[in-house]
Structures are given as structure tokens and as C-alpha cells.
Image (cartoon, rainbow, N blue to C red; front, side, top):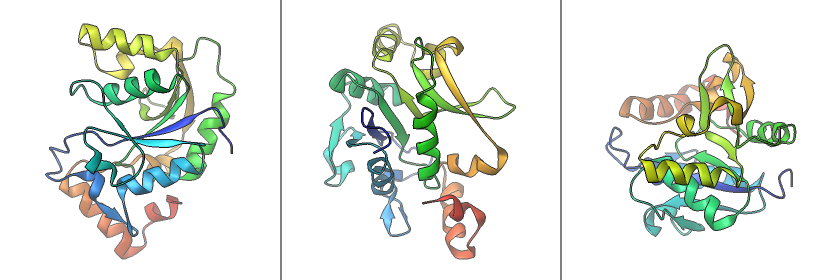
Amino acid sequence: MPAPDVWGLVLAGGLSSRLGQDKARLCYRGQTLVERAYALLTRVCPRAAISCRCLETAAGLPALLDATERVGPLGGILTALEAWSRPVLVLACDMPWMGEEALYRLVLARSQRSRQTLMTAWARQGTPYIEALAAIYEPEAAAVLRHGLNTGVYQLTRLIGPQYRHLVPYTEAEAGWFFNVNTPADAAQLDCSLENGSSASLLAP
């Protein structure tokens, strides 16, 4: 097990308002997106759970109900950090092309973090963009996220500044890992990848 001290968390508590249907229940390669993300995390972490607002979303998988009001991903991550008191590998359920290699490399990179690091995350090479929803959060990040919740600041990258991040660059060729399904057009692209055997499907485990 590459990350014996890190537990996995699938983020599946969003409204999916732009998509018009629950993205967690979309199917890809014979699994729902939430099942696929959970299976991926369990290959890397000794324990994983679905962060959601109702047990129905977890579809019988281990669940951790979001203990906050609807404040976006911050709520689920904070709930897990406070409940588990250990590092948490977070993965949004809507990244169907995420690969096991990406998570292994993230875990390996975490071992090289500085003492003040609160988040180990992928970053798009040559840009300021980071992947905050495919990242590892340290237990100490809970206090920072709790402060954000109390003060109405919910954006993860605003709360965890550059000095507290350990970033792992990814290339244009690896960008497919982070494709996420937010709109009907995205869902259609997912369907097309199955029909034509696109390179995106090759990135999936």
C-alpha cells in the first residue's frame, strides 16, 4: 500500500446544477463515476469513503456525510480532516479519466514536502492553475479551513496560500487526467471517448 497513513475521500456532495443530473450516477466503463473514483482510491489508500450529503449518493459504499452547510468542496474536506485526524487524499467524483499512476505519483511527491505544507497538489506546468480537488490535505489544514468556514471564505486556494503548497507539475500530455464532467457537453465528450477509443480513455486505469 503506497499511502498507509493517508485515507481517501471521494467528493460527491455537489448539486450538479450545470449538468442537470447527478454526476455521481453517470456511468463510464460499467461503473458510476462515484464507484470508479472510490475503486481508484482504494488501490492507493487503506481506507476510503464518499463525501456526500445523503447516503443514497454513496450507493452502499462507505460514506462520510458533510457536516457543514453547502459551502462547496471545503465542507467535505473539512469534515474528513476533523473526523479522521489524518492526511486525506481528495478526488472529485467527476474526473473519470484520472489514473492510478497520477495518484501514486502524488503520494510519492508528498514524502518530499516541507514541514509547513498543508496541501500536496498537481499543478499545470507553465500556468498558475492547481488541481485542488485531486490533492492531499494534511491534518493541520483543518484549522485553516475551519477559519475559512467561519469567515465566509470557501475557496481552497485562497485559504491555502502558495507557501503552504507542495506542487507537482503535470504536462499537457497528462492533462486528460483532470478532465471533469460539469456540463452536458462534457458528458457527451465522455460518451464519444468510448465510441471512438480516444487517447483520453487510454489515460484511465
